[in-house]
Amino acid sequence: MSKKGHQFRPDVLRLIMIFFAMIIICSTDVTANNNTLNEIYVTTEEELRAAFRNRNAIIVVNTTIQLTEEAIEVNGNITLQGDGVIEATGRFEHFIVNEGAEFTLAGDLTLLSVASSRFGGITVHGTLNMHGGVIRDSANSGVNVSYGTFNMYGGKIIYNENLSSSQPRGGGVNLRRATFNMYDGLIANNIGSGVSARINSMINIYGGVISDNEGYRSGIDLVNSFLVIYDGEIRGSSLTNSNTITLMIESHAAIHGGVIDGGILKYAFNTLSATAGEIDHIFIDHNFDHYFNDSVALGSNVVIHSIQEYEGAQPPWSAPPRWRASHRWSISLFQPYIYVGVVVVILIFKLVRTIIFFRTWKRIKQYRLEKLKEDGVICCE
Image (cartoon, rainbow, N blue to C red; front, side, top):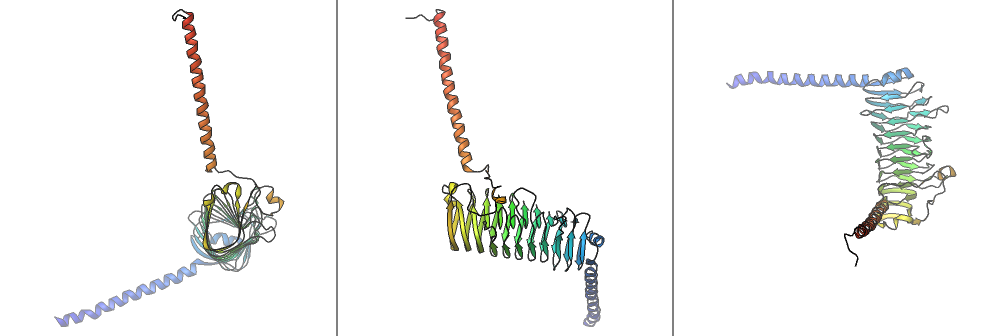
C-alpha cells in the first residue's frame, strides 16, 4: 500500500507546479499588456480627446497642445502627466471631471489659459487628485469644485482669478458643497482669495502653502463652511495686507497646528478654536461677539501675537477700494437676535389683540344694556 501511495505523489506535485507556473505567466502577461495599453502618448488635440474617451488610461503630454473646441470631459479613471503645456484658447475650461470620475494630474504638465480667452481651469464634480503640474492664468478659478472632492498632494495653482461675480472669491480654488484636502503644494498670487468655501463645504489643511493671494478677502474665505488646519503655512498678501482667514455666516474653524501669518477676521455667530500653531492676530467683531464670548476657544499651546476687538461695520483691513466698496453685511436666518425679535413682535401682537378684544366686548355690552333700557325691559331706578 505504501508503494502505491508513493507512485501518485510525484504526479500530484508536478500538476501543482504547472498550475502555479501558468498563473504567474498569465498574470505577468496581463500586467505588461495593461501597462502598454494604458500609457498613451499624444501630440495633438485630436489625439488628446480620443485618449480621454478611454475609461482607464495614463495619458502623457510632452509637447504644447491647444484646445480650440470645448472642454474635455473626464468620465473614467484618467491620469494626465508629462512636461508639456495644454492651452485653452476659448471661453471654456480645460477639463470637466464628471460625477463618479477620478482625474489625476501629475508630472510637470502646465494647464495654461492664453491671454485672448482667460478662462480655462478644471471644474470638478467627481474627484481630482493633483500630485504635480501647474494650473495658471485662469479667469474661472484654477480649480472649481461643486459637489466633488479635490485632493492636493503637490503642484502649483498660481495667477488665477475668479471674475464670475462682483465680489471675486476663490481665484485659486472655489468650493461649493465640496471637500478640499491639501497635503502639499502651493496656492499663490491668485486674485479673489486663495481658497473660497461656500454652502457646507469642508477644508482640511495638512500641509502646503497658501500665500500672497489678494482681493476681496485674502487666503481662505469661509461662508457657512468648515475649516480644520493641522499643518502648513497660510500667509496674507503683502500688497493688500488683508486678512488671511475670514469666517462669515455660521462658519467654523479649528486650528491644531501650522503658521497663520496674517489676521483671522471672525464675524459674529461663527466659532473659532485653536489648540496649537502660531497665529499673527485675531480680529473679533465687538458689536455682537461680546454677547457670545464662548465662540472663541484658545488652548495653551497656541501662540497668538495679538487679539483685537473692532467696532463698526468696517473690519480692520486695507484692501483696495475695488474690494472694500463692495463689502456688505450678510444676515443669517439662524442668528439668535432675529429669533428674539420675532418672539417680541408676536407677544406685542397678542397683547394688542387682547386689549382690542376686551374694549370691543365692553362697548358691545354697554350698547346692549342701553338698548334694553330704551325698550323698557330694564327699569331705570
